[in-house]
Image 1: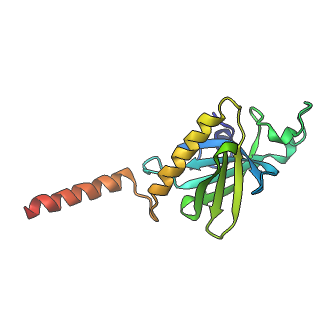
Image 2: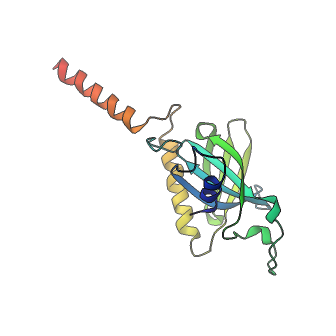
Image 3: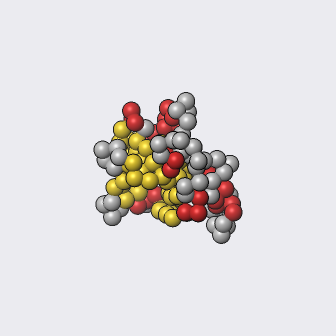
Length: 173
């Protein structure tokens, strides 16, 4: 179970605690690559019947845990800590978010919001897993881009529409 999933399961997020969720830890960086802060990003389907995800969740380490790393690493904030507490600070409907690959060599994504605000995320994971996890994000981005709809269609709605079209075709023949 990921950190964000644990956060949803332990809080007052009843509707979201069992939703399908794809999550990863990132560093928010500037366009040039300077580190700004840590963030966990999740892409979720608020209803298991939805064909595609419809929500972006953003979380950060809870303030009470900041500075508890006693290692000699240059930036303790940059390391993903197992079992850390997260604080959810953003729930964004995906119809107001556009995700892009910003720099594949640095495993960076670009997030553009409907209000024009743009921010950049650099994948933060074990170096041996970076390529695999980033490839999963890229596949998700392409699926979201090529299946863009203002109103998500559930499997039931899609199947009903398909049956309705087939009935019209067979009755007109």
